[in-house]
Image 1 (tube, rainbow, N blue to C red):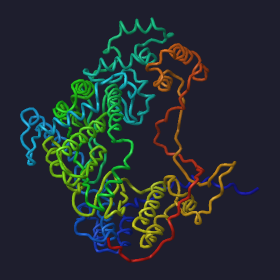
Image 2 (cartoon, rainbow, N blue to C red; image 1 turned 60 degrees about the vertical axis):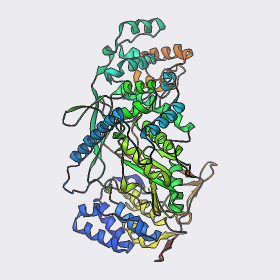
Image 3 (tube, rainbow, N blue to C red; image 1 turned 120 degrees about the vertical axis):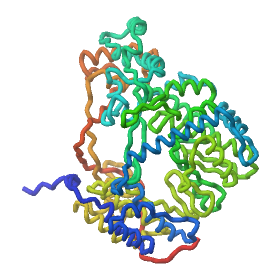
Image 4 (tube, rainbow, N blue to C red; image 1 turned 180 degrees about the vertical axis):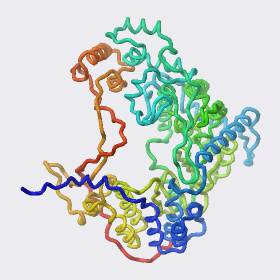
Amino acid sequence: MGTKRPCPSRGMYRHNHDYATSGAIRLFQALGTDFGETAAGLLERGDFAAVLQLQVDALTYDCADRFRDDYFVAEHLSKFPNFDVGIDRVAVAIEKFRKAEKDCSEANHRLKSHYGKASTTLSVASLIYTARRKIERLLGPLDWDEAEQYFGFGPGSTTSLKRTRGDAYWKFGASKPHVTKECAVLGFAAIRRIPTWFARLAGFSGELTESVLESLSERVRPEDIFQIVPGNRVITVPKNAKTDRVIAVEPDLNMFCQKGLGGVIRSRLKRAGVDLDDQSLNQRLACEGSVNGSLATLDLSAASDSVAMQLVRELLPPDWVEAIETCRSPQGVLPNGEVISYQKVSSMGNGFTFELESLIFWALVHSVLDYSETSERRVAVYGDDLIFSVEIYEPVVELLSFCGFTVNEKKSFATGKFRESCGSHFFSGRDVTPFYVRESVDNPERLLWYSNSIRRWARKGMTWGLDGRLQDSYLSSVKLLPKFWQKPLIPDGLGDIALIGDFDEVRPKKAPRGFSGWLGLGVSRKVNMFLPEDVPILIKGLNNIAKSDDDLFSRISKAVSSFRKDGIKKDVGVVVPLGVVKPTRDVKWQVVKPITEQWESFGPWIHSTACLQL
C-alpha cells in the first residue's frame, strides 16, 4: 500500500520567531538608499524609538521612485505595536481621551456663547447657519419606522458581553440586556416589535398570541427586562508602539438603536453623493490632487472623540438631536473606575459616530465652498478623510478648529505632489502606498501575508514586472514557510490563503465540473460553527421579518412553539439560520480550492536602478 499523503494544512501549525523586525531590516537594506540604511542600522541596534521618529518631507522630493522608497521606510513599522519603547500606551491613550473631552468642553462653551469672526471676514455664525440648512434639507424629519429597518447589533462586545460573544445570537439570548435610562423606553419599544424576543425577556414560554403580547405589555416594565447602566465602558486596544486606541463599549440596547440612526444618516448621505460604503471616490480624487495640485486632502486627529454635543445641537434638527441624546451614552466608565459625563456626543464604538461625523464634515466643508469663488466644486467625505479645493483649505481648517476639531498636520496635504486619503497614497499620480506591519509575523499564516505583501509592493512604481531589489527579501520570507506552501498557488485577489503567482508560474488546472476558470489551492482558518436549538437562534434568524410583517405573526408564533417543543429540526416553513461561531482559542485549518476566472500576472523580477523623474 502506498504512503498516505499528509494534509497540507498540518504545516500551518508550525510557529516561527517574529520576523517583523528582521524582515524590515532586509527590506530597508535592499532598497539601497541612505535613509533605508540608517533605519536598518537603528533596528539592528534595537533603537526602536528612533525608528518610530523617522519621517520624510514630501516637499523635498522630485523623484517618485526615491520618495516611494524613503516613505516606505518611514511608514512600514509605524503601526507596529510590539516595540518596547518605554511608553505607557494606555496612559497616553487616556490622556488623549481627556484632552479631546477638554477640547469638546471649550467648543461647547464657544458655540453656546458667541461665534466670533473668521479671518475670511465671514462670520462663523453664517457658515454654521448654512451648514445647518444643508443638514436639515438632507435629513428631513426623523421617522422611527425607517430607523427601525437598521436596528441591530454590531459584531463586537457590549457592556454585558465579551467580544468572543459578539454574535447576535448571544445578544438576543442575554437574560437582561444593558441600557441607559435615557434609552430604556425606546429600547422597550424596539423589543416589543420583536414578539419572540419580548416574550423571552418577559419570562413567557407558552404559545404567543396577540392577547398574550398585549397582556405582557401591560404588566412588564422596562426595568423588569433591562439592567440600567450609567453609560458605556471605555477601553483601549493596541494601535502602535506609542499609544493605544480608545474605544467605547456601548450598552446592548443603546447600540441596537444607535445602528438605526446611523443607517438612516448613511442612506441620506448617498443622496448627496457621499457613499460611506465605498472609498474609491476619495482615492481617485487623492490621485488627481497629487497630479495637478487642485485638491487638498485633510485628516483630523481623534475626530470621533471631538464631536462636541453643542455642535450637534447647532447643526441638526431638534427631532434628530433628541433622538441622538436618547441613544447616546451620557456617561462613560474609565478603566480606573472613574465615571465621567461626556462633553462629546459619542466615541468610536458607537453605532452612529462614523455616519454623524461624516454628515457634519460634509455640511461644514460645503458651507465654506458656498461662499467661495473657486472653480473646483468637488468634495469627498469618508469619516474624517476630507478632500476639497486647495483654495478653501485655510477657511475650512479655521472653521473646523473653531468647532473643536484638530487637523492632523502629518496626514493633511494642500501643497506639493503628495496626497493621502482612505489608505491610498500618491505622489505625482503614482501609487506609493506602503504596506504596514500591524501585528507580529510569527506563524505561517502571517508569513504568507508578509511574502505576498512584499510581492504586491514590489509591483508599485513598475510599468511591468517586479522591483528586483526586493527579490531576496521575498525569497527569505518564503523559505520560512512550510515546504508545501513555498510555491505560488493562487492569483492575486483571493486573499493570502497561499503565495500569489503568475499564471505561467503556477500552471493551474482548469476548474472542474464545467465551471469556467482555473483552480487554485490554499489554506484558511476553519470556522467552528454550532447550531443551538433554542429561541435566541430563532430570534436572530427572524429579526428582519418579525419587525413589521403582521402576516407572518402566526407563522412566527408557530415556529417559536415548535422550537420549544421539538428543537430546530421541526419544519415550520421558516428560514433557519446557518449557525453561530463557537468561541475558541484553538486555531484549526482547512484546505480550500477556490475557482477564479481571471489570473492577473505581475511579471518577472526586474533589476534596474533607473529613477523615473516626474
